[in-house]
Image (cartoon, rainbow, N blue to C red; front, side, top):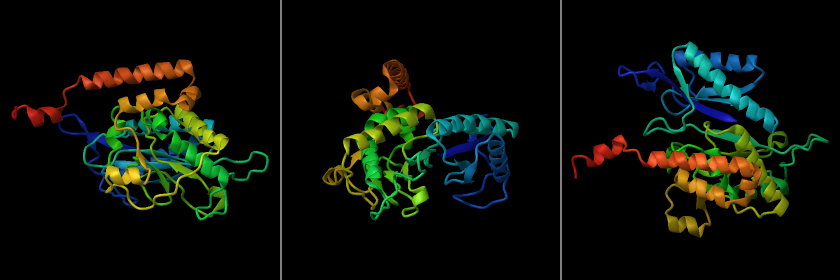
Amino acid sequence: PEIEFFLLERGPDGKPVPATRDRSSYFDFSTDRSVALRQSMVSALESMGIPVNTAHHEVAGGQHEIDIDASPALKAADDVMTFRYALKAVAQQAGVLATFMPKPFDGVPGSGMHVHQSLIDTSGGTNAFSGNDDYGLSDVAKHFIAGQLHHAAGITAVLAPLVNSYKRLVRGFEAPIFISWARTNRGALIRVPHVGRSQVTRVELRSPDPSCNPYLAFAVMLRCGLDGIERRLPLPPPVEESLYGFDDVELERRNVGVLPDNLKDAVDALEADEVVMDALGDHLAEGFIDAKRLEWREYRGQVTPWEVDQYLERY
């Protein structure tokens, strides 16, 4: 997983703001305070048995990313849970707040948790996704991707489980809102990086955010990919050009769908998807849906500062 987060300080009014001494930008090498803090986080993770692949600054002020090494799904979920706890503890010791809220601020990118997936043959250790086509994909990989695309709407409530998650999943900011796949297109739901390197041939699902329950997220992701393999679902053509400028007519012409706009629509899609519901199990699915519908109702009853600014004096 590639886990993004913000480091925040308390402003004069006591509200969290991006760390004021954080002057870095995407993949920048800087000597500001946040670099030392991020390195302390990496050291803490590695001391707890979580190998770190990469750590760098992200696009927004105060935004960072730490990528942890690949591991079996259950171990990866354990690592994500430990990761979140450890980073919050290290940040608190330094007098700052680490938040995994998907979209804490307007006008800047939100925080995602892109998940790289491979299927490994346990008998021989070979990568079942590695193939010889132009994208380096096997038929197994193509069916796996097709399965996740087919169930993309149904798994969204699990991968992006908060009302706030859908403030991240909007046009722009390289948000992966389009149900398509590609090699380099960051607006696509799925990317296939590092083509041709058989040991790391993998599928990157870009819609999850770091607020999700990784056990549920990885379970439904795998189940939907396996459904594609079992049913031999055909993989649609990749879309490499940017889709953000396309209107609904052009998207329909290309047979490209869009992820649910909000938590309510995502929960409706989950409830209608038998494969995802079966992966969660009746008891868990019912409890999850009830909790998310309650969250949506509570949100719908709130009057936001944006509404007050827009309407109070105008009407």
